[in-house]
Amino acid sequence: MSVNALYDYKFEPKDKVENFNGMQLLYVYWPDHLLFCSPFALLVQPDMTFRALVDEILKPATAAHPDSAKADFLKGEWLLNDQPFRPKADTSLKEQGIDHKSMLTVTTPGLNGMANAGY
Image (cartoon, rainbow, N blue to C red; front, side):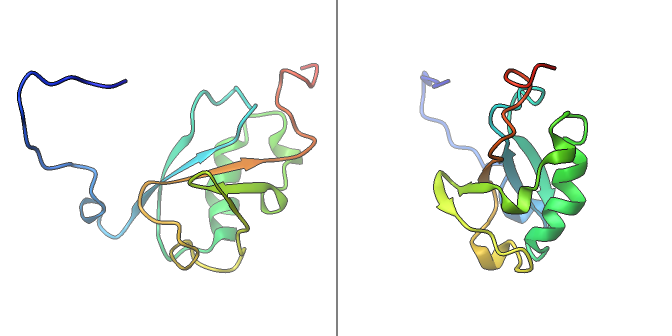
């Protein structure tokens, strides 16, 4: 939602990477899985591997969804900031260009969420 200010104002953003003590925000979206109404906002270490992101953070975060047990996120189709992306499982997020407030989107072919699965 856009905002029209009545006057010019300046402020210091509170969500700058410098304010996260070496960590960074990462948004991850799993479309069609409407048990989760919006992308996850995750606090991650920039030097963690993509495999660690999936195994230690994403899988537990999505565990409540019936498709989660069948999802192979490492073989999913990924976008990084709306651009096609092929993650390297054993390479750090930082080395792959995943930085503060990046948006990852993953689709898992054959797993279309609850709407088409008859749950």
